[in-house]
Length: 431
Ligand SMILES: NC(=O)c1ccc[n+]([C@@H]2O[C@H](COP(=O)([O-])OP(=O)(O)OC[C@H]3O[C@@H](n4cnc5c(N)ncnc54)[C@H](O)[C@@H]3O)[C@@H](O)[C@H]2O)c1
Image (cartoon, rainbow, N blue to C red; front, side, top):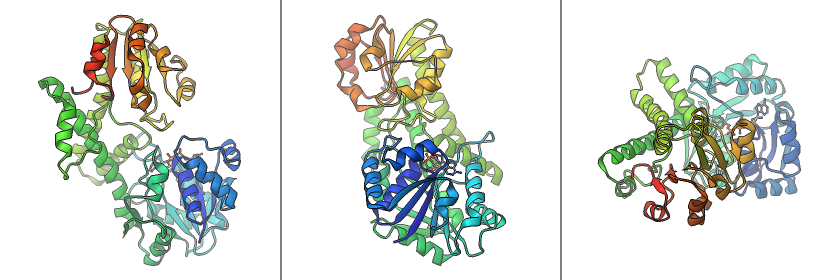
């Protein structure tokens, strides 16, 4: 079993640290956020992720998991240093690697000979070489190895995805280093693909861009279904039975969001531009997505008779998808922002992220349940597919609203005819 340092205790870092500890490794997880580290050291997990609190508690209890402030103290005795810090979108669309570079400069002088630095953050093609070069410039020993090991976990399912992954990808030019990284995953049943660093880095971006393409594709089909009176749910079902297509990621909605797809598609577009390749397909995917957010706002504006000024809108759901507390690049927040800009009063309810949203958007009236969000509203927008929105007393919801009682179900979560029977002017997406 190995000594592992994980730098960054966010969605990916914390999951990586807790899961590697559960596989028997001795893990020190570092973050710059002192409050987060203090909470974690007491077993308090600051993010919503099923199964993670139990794994953190097990790791702490067994003495296999520790939390520290700062990357250097964690990296000092490590055989492997996992970089799990954020790589957000910069102004040019490229990935901003400044957090990665800061960690590299911090850990380089303290790394033991033979340590392997593992790039788990999503980083563009060339980053494995970049990290190796910057480590050496910052004084790391010559035999420190670097490997790319991109992460494919889904928020809300992170622990399962880490421990039962569809594949583990390792990109490294040094076969011995790749074998050492693969041994960390010995207990995991999954295909391990060892490849060169550029291909490993591209696999991550290509995978996210492909999933984003699937979403934009079904959203475009949904929009066309609206124009020709077809039902996209039937269409997606009929498509999905074809094993070459499959059912996953064929759910129309308000457009993709979250901390990965928007920035990763932007970064891949940037990579294509820099390489002189005209990736018009991917640009189209991004544009369809931007328009999809707008279509939801247009549906609401039309339902209000053309203007949102002074209209009260109830909003159900704020996170970028259900079963996570992550608000980053949430389409629901884009819609709320536009509603507020149009002069609407927005009463929003989210099962987990209301307070965090209120801190970001002081004009948003965050309320404590679905009925309160609908009370007195003329329009209602279902923006995140939380399961609890299926099981409400819809007669009570409708009774609390005022005309026209328009319900825009941006996730196609509810049954249109049942909603119309209850008195809502219901609109879904593509049906
Ligand atoms: N969130 C996902 O679903 C997901 C999935 C796959 C890959 N990724 C990739 O993983 C990376 C991390 O994503 P995330 O969502 O976990 O980000 P995050 O923002 O949740 O976590 C990053 C953490 O790193 C910490 N940090 C920043 N600088 C540091 C430093 N110098 N020393 C120690 N800690 C530092 C931050 O305080 C933060 O807690 C990104 O590249 C992302 O694209 C994310």
